[in-house]
Length: 210
Image (cartoon, rainbow, N blue to C red):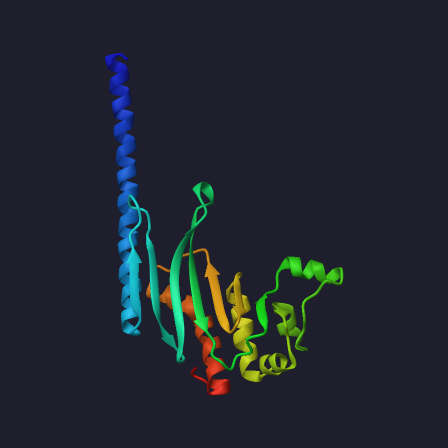
C-alpha cells in the first residue's frame, strides 16, 4: 500500500469514526433524556423504576411498576428482531381486577378478520354494532356479554381499539404493545390514557379494587 493509499484510508477511517462517534453521542443523549423522563414519571406516581444500559451507546431497556385503580400496572421496553428488523417495543400490562370476566378474550378487529367474515368465519358478537365491528371477541359468555354492554364500558373499549393496533385482554389482564418509546411526559401520558380509562371504568362499574 502506497503512502497516498494509506492517507486515503486513514482519512476515510477518520471520517467514519467521527460519524459513528456523533451518532453514538446522539443516541446516548436521547437515552439519558428518556431515563430522566421515565424515572420522573414513575417517581411522581410512587412507582418503581429500573433501567438496563444498552451496548455501545445503543438504547437500553426501562421498566416501571406500580398500581393504578388499585391494580398492578407495568410499563416496559423490549428489544425485538435483528438487523434491519430490529425495533424497540413499549409494552403496557394492566390487571383489570377480579370482577372483569376472565373467560373473555378481546383483541382489535383486523382487516384479516373482516375478510374472514365474508367467508363465514367470524368471531363472536355482543349485540352492539360499534363494539362488534371494532373488537375481535372470543368466549363471550352471558356474563361477559352483560358486562361489556354496560354503558360505562363501551367508550373506553372503543377508545382502546382506536388508540392501539396491537392489544389483548386475556385472563383479566390488558396488554398493549406499540413500536415506539415515549420520550416525553406528555407521550407517556397519552400512551397510558386509554389504558387508564378502561381500568377506571372497570373499577367504577364494579367498585372492585382487587
